[in-house]
Each structure stands twice: as C-alpha cells, then as structure tokens.
Length: 196
Image (cartoon, rainbow, N blue to C red; front, top):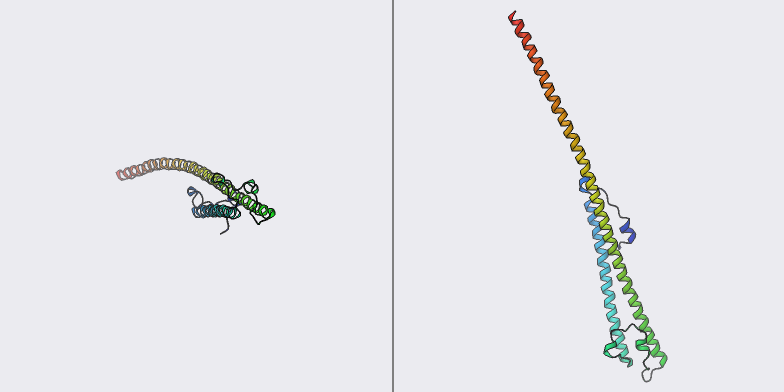
C-alpha cells in the first residue's frame, strides 16, 4: 500500500453513516486510521534503518581511521561528522597526502549525507504525526457538530410529536363528549316515543 501524503490526509472526506446519529461511516474511518498507522510505522522503520546505517557508517569511519592511523582520542569519538576531525592528521607512511585527503572528504560527505537523511526522516515523521493529529481533531469536531445538530433536530421532532399527541387527545375527549351527548339524545327520543 502506498504511503499517505499530506494531500491525502488534508483532503480526506468520510461518507455519512446510514443513520445520522452514527456520525461518519465507521468502516471508512477505521480504514483511513489503518492507513495512517501503516504510514507512521513505515516512517518509524525507515528512521530505525537510517539510524542503524549511521551506526554502521560511524563504525566504518572509525575502522578506516584506525587503518589510516588517524584515530582520534576517545573524547573526540562523538563528533565524526566534522570534516576537520580527520583532515588535520598527517597521511600514513607510503600513502600520498591526496589519498588521505580524499578518504577524509569521502567520509565527511557520507556523514553529512547521512545526517541530512536522518534529519529529513525525522522532520517528515513529525509533519505526518502533526497532520494526523490535526485531521483527527477536525474529524472529532465535525462528528460532535453533527451529533449536536442531530440531537437538536430530534428534540424539535419530539416536541412536535408531543404537541400532535396532545391535540389528538383533546380531539378524542371532545369527540367522546359529543358522541355521548348524541347517544343520550337518541336514547331520550326512543324513551319518549315508547311512552307515547
């Protein structure tokens, strides 16, 4: 599955559920969250691989410096990315100054490129996480808004139904009263005719 882009996250729109009170289509939201999780997992894996490559590159730099006799004191081992860290040493016996300088330049370039890749990976990870958090906040806000509008609509419908029920009860009472009056008048007419 392809990784999500900023455009994918920002422009994602969910379908409404079949019932308004359910909010968005849960399957669609779950699928999107799975994609976000996979993208974050892929970026985390890339970051770990880059960090492992950095450690390998540092170990290789140390190994090459040891082979060239350019090993630094223990206190300087934590800053191999500085070009001056190996450039100031004299070349190994039997090796030309150009070869030593070339090796040092290559190591510095490799270190710099690696640092840039790691920094870019971290920046991209932070950006995607920030965008995913913003999108989740927007989705929650929209869902709450739909929920509130649905509740308001249902309250209005309930109020209307209660008014109709009240009107029907009043109509029923009135109808019963008139029906009783009519039946009583019929009975009186029948009784009066029987007495004649």
